[in-house]
Image (cartoon, rainbow, N blue to C red; front, top):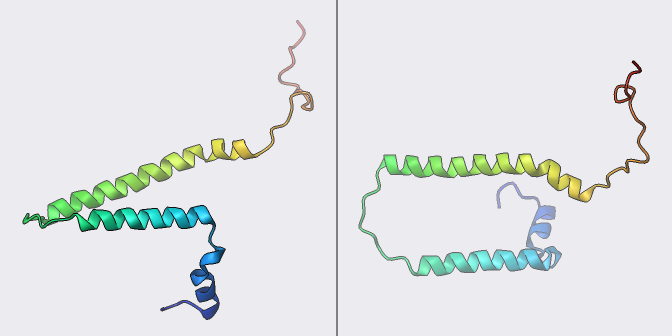
Amino acid sequence: MLGVTPAMEGEISDRAAWPRPMRQALLSVVGASALCLLGVSPAHAYVDAGTGSILLQAILGTVAVGSAVLTGLRGRIRALFTRSTSRAGRKTSPVSKAAPK
C-alpha cells in the first residue's frame, strides 16, 4: 500500500481492535451494497455530462447541508455531555440589579 507504514498496517488490519458495533455496521453496509449490486440489470440509457453535473451538485449540496446541520448542533450535543453550573453558585452582575430611583 502506498504511503502506509508497517506500524499503520498493523493498526488497520487488526480487526480485534475495532469495536463490535462498528464491525457490525460495516458488515451490514457492505452486505446491503452487495445485495443492491446483485439486482442491477442493464438500463440501456444515455447519461450525458449534464446529468453527471446535476448528480455532483446534489451530492455536494447534501454534504454542505449535513455539515451545516452538524455544526449548528455541535453546541447542543456538547451540552449533553458537559456539567452545567447551578444558579446558586453564580454571582449576580451589577447590570442585572435594579437601580434605585
